[in-house]
Length: 58
Image (cartoon, rainbow, N blue to C red; front, top):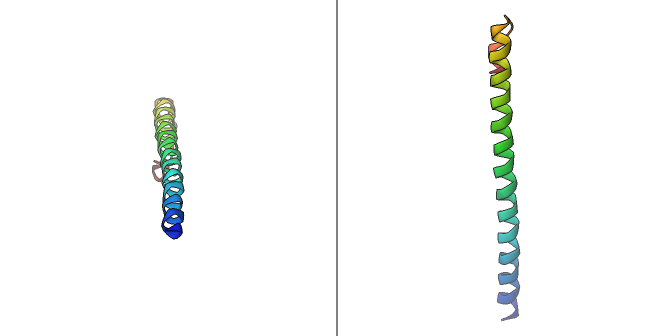
């Protein structure tokens, strides 16, 4: 019985860790999307001025 309780506790802690990691990944994804939007915006701005990022950057 004690082993089952320990396993149950480990599963609960693992679940909490997975939820935290999921939140970190979600925030990182949002930051990457915002960064990509900013790069695209800056690229359009500089294209109008005759400058642009190389194709491999986009």
